[in-house]
Image (cartoon, rainbow, N blue to C red; front, side, top):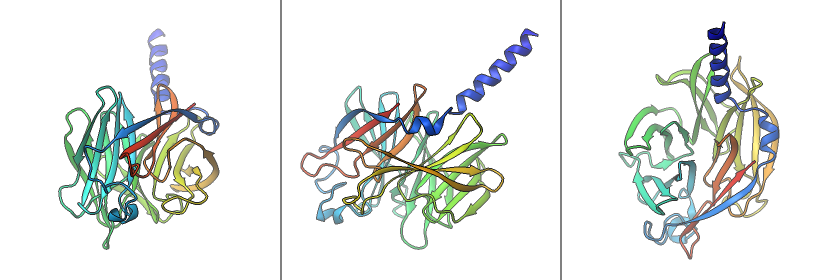
Length: 297
């Protein structure tokens, strides 16, 4: 009998580790916890990742994805002038900053919003001119090695995330005009459809312990670059699992010091708490620093 109890307990623990209780209530309570500034002056040229006219006022050249793991910040961006899909790794303990080029060719250069799963970053890189396409790659944070997983030839992908349905791991690829569901790791297509959800910044999937699956679009409603109506917003949808379609639930507005949800933004569970990590879109023009805010419960 005790063995049966132990098995049930392990199943409960496993389930608890992959679901998040009271998602909507907890998201609304996120507040600014801390901020940091990262100096890029020794790594990038004067005009790169800024609003400089020499950088076409930041068009197609801003920070896009971010994640935190064990005192390291991982940040993605795309540099149109050098055709480089960039990954920046900032070690908070050692106070170091490194840059890694992700793309093999100049075709795909715009690194999008990525997700962290275990020791791996799953990163989409886009081709922004017709015909649109993307590559999905896997970056090993232990040894900094890259592995290319999938080429999406029918559209670009600006963000991605994972979910589990009926014991199947599914990777979801987001574009403002399309959401695609693939079985992982073989990338067998389940469904691709035009759904009004993703607005081009960051997207996150949260599986609530009540069985609900929430799709969260993280965005800013300001003019690009956001100058007017500058609000950081979570657009929250619920997934109808039988049809893989989305229904709008609510919007949540959040505030921070320097961050902008049109720049690098992500939602992570850290130390059993919900956290949003977000940077500004661009480097400070004069100091070449990037501001990053941490919001938590």
